Image (tube, rainbow, N blue to C red; front, side):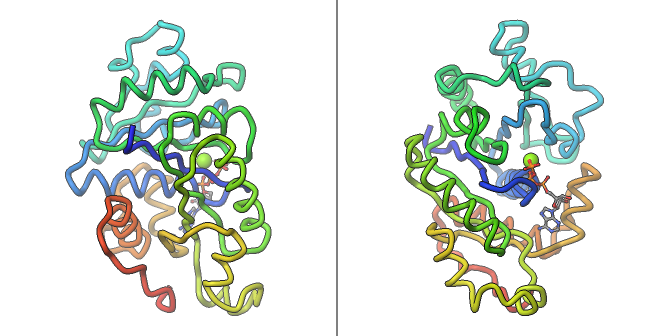
Length: 248
Ligand SMILES: Nc1ncnc2c1ncn2[C@@H]1O[C@H](COP(=O)(O)OP(=O)(O)OP(=O)(O)O)[C@@H](O)[C@H]1O
Ligand SMILES: [Mg+2]
């Protein structure tokens, strides 16, 4: 399960699902078979973002209950043939236990090059379920003190859950906003606030946001898609420099 990554955050709404989809699409564009697992029970959004909402019948709870075979509950993304989705349960009561999650992901990981698990925000049952099978974590935060403090708290919870390899994704970065806010002097102090090694800076990008919300591929040359491409390469161990944030 080396290639199982949980995408998480302390604070909600910082872009976990957007980053999960963009990273999944970037890995798929590199020729990898990628499965996204939505663990946001009751509030799943990946079925909408991947364009499978209208024909989706089964979700992860149906697989766990035995009502569906895994292959019947995995749906192909509408715009990227190498990208697949196992949807979140419809209600919070159906959140999958960590033990069952480990077993299920163990089976599924034989068929995919990468599994990306989209976690709910915070450190509740959904987070524990999402983190259970992961070998590594991407902690998403926006570059503000509230989000970064929550990211630091998540780092501890990930460690308690046994996920020691953690990397920070700073999302929605805008150098103009960063300068006006004056919360941090530079990116190094952002990293220090989270206490997690940086792997990517994803810019504020209305094109990426709009495409994701409309279940379309982000324009290849959009700043967000380019940042996701670099993140994909770095996740696979390539020596790709971080994006030049002064251009965002
Ligand atoms: N890089 C970005 N540039 C512009 N908008 C973004 C970016 N990333 C995310 N957004 C926007 O931020 C909002 C929240 O994004 P998203 O749903 O991905 O967050 P989340 O962390 O998954 O939320 P939740 O905690 O509710 O699951 C959405 O409106 C999305 O379009
Ligand atoms: Mg989400």
